[in-house]
Amino acid sequence: MISSIPPPEVQPAFKLKVEDLNVYYGDFQAIKHAALDVPENQITALIGPSGCGKTTFLRALNRMHDLSPNVRVEGKVELDGEDIYARDVDPVAIRHRIGMVFQRPNPFPKSIYENVVYGPKIHGIRSRRKLAEICERSLHRAALWDEVKDRLNRSALDLSGGQQQRLCIARVLAVEPEVILMDEPASALDPIATSKIEDLLGELTDDYTVVIVTHSMQQAARISDFTAFFLMGDLIEVGATSEIFVKPKDKRTEDYITGRYG
Image 1 (cartoon, helix red, strand yellow):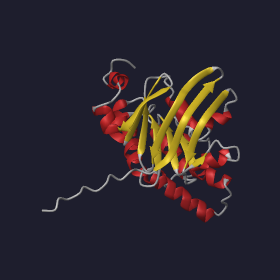
Image 2 (cartoon, rainbow, N blue to C red):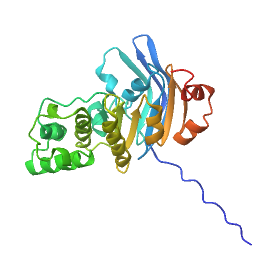
Image 3 (cartoon, rainbow, N blue to C red):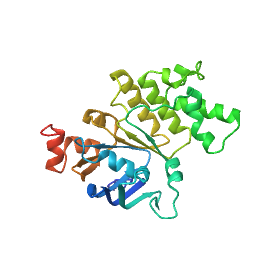
Image 4 (cartoon, rainbow, N blue to C red):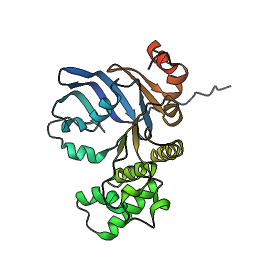
């Protein structure tokens, strides 16, 4: 009898690779020698107590810290093998490829339509037909089209909080990024709006790689494929979400997940 040989495990492709990342606010080191591989077309959640460095790490992934004069970033962040901090790399081009959704909805004081097509216009698209297609496609992807298709010329500020956040997601999608960073995108929303955002995230991984900061361990367990635990600027543990929450390897991770601190 010929015994069957199990197929080798398929190793995930990594969209982002972070090596020896250090971030300083003046003399204060907020991130210490962090290393993380971010799998492509998956959701990676960053968890940890308030002030542990989650958002600081997230902002380093698309050079958002370049906009703050007192912040210094050292180390390497690779996007498809290219170091985004190399001297010849344009940070604006990086933010085109790696979009970001912030904690609180921040729609522009413009119409719903103008919010969505703002990025494509900046990148040179002028065709009204093309812009209309981008607007509809992006709002569909953000699960908002059916709610706003008859009032695209209305102010985005008239939308509810949850709708505004999905509009901000549509605005990011309109420039067709490869990675979407999200900084606690549902923390200011009610449970129904939060549920819609979470459902949307599950659909986005068909086309995008997502990295999300969340203060909710329940949310991380529900939506993410991989989880990274931060504590006082250190990246303590990374692994499949099912393993991190069921059988963490580090006692500090277990203590945080079980509510002993944080």
